[in-house]
Image (spheres, rainbow, N blue to C red):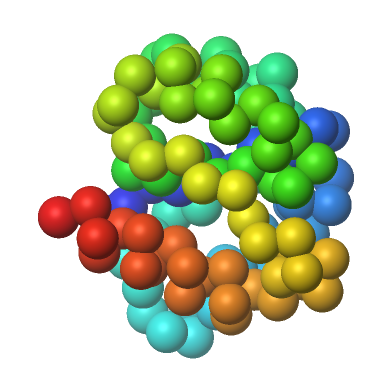
Length: 105
């Protein structure tokens, strides 16, 4: 089971996107767990949990380097495509997640 953590400034709009992604995960039967939290909570979780991928909402893209430093090479850090994020295109975001996870191997 892959573990994906999605971070944004407050966790509100990202939570809506993640709920849509969860529906796509069910439809496609992907072995993946995803959750959305605020950047503040995410910093805490990263220190105590293991993740396979860390996704940033476009509004916190400027924190990518800081998050890469925090995960210290344990997982990739990517920014969600702003168009897919704005359009709540869960299918495209899930496809990107799967591609990133597959390219890790």
